[in-house]
Image 1 (tube, helix red, strand yellow):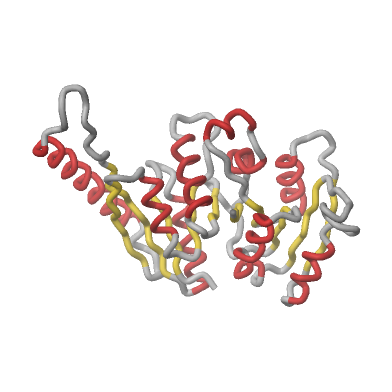
Image 2 (tube, rainbow, N blue to C red; image 1 turned 90 degrees about the horizontal axis):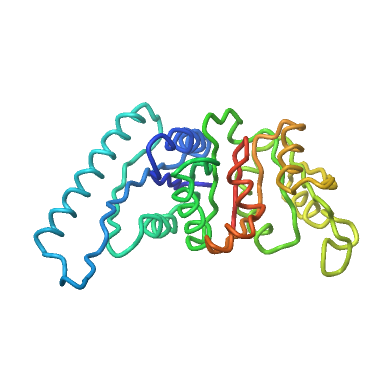
Length: 280
């Protein structure tokens, strides 16, 4: 059961879908929702001209606190209708980046909800940094929700993007509260490799048997990518069956390496049309 759900404020205009999803899940699980606003003021750094004057730094810090309080109050008014336990939390990020502070707060929640990453926006790397820091360092799952999401949560139908990896296994375990509420679950294996060190003799059968022992209704589906990306094949299948949720392992790299190599996780974060629960 999810009892604590965290929604970090990332940027203006991206909080509505994550907050609405968190509230819907809180209603289903009788959970508590916390929206997090960070006071983002960098630590004073010495330069060739000496250290920053204390009174100047104190003024910058107080201005950042004032902005954070105003933002928190605006969010409180926007989501005042929430009929669930709801709080606005303010955390200071003085010696940390805002995403580092959010990652620390996420360790005290069962689930963190974030927006997806826009394709062409000056804000996309900010969303990227929040997502990867929380995914890699909080030890908790991250649910990303696209703007304008209409998928039902808790889901009626879920798709597990299965690979025999630690990350995918962790995602299945972390998604179990949602999977238990689904009417149907598809274990989707794309381009399976049969073998002892890969998917085994029957790809997807072992994880399906594990979920069936938990009383879940599971079907294993194998699909070739057909020279498309794995992300495209996954999203197209989810669209075809009318899924409400994808469950996937999250594979994080440094920003530079990710920008050079791309990656299924990053592509999914950018292009998904429905919520995705990632775990690392």
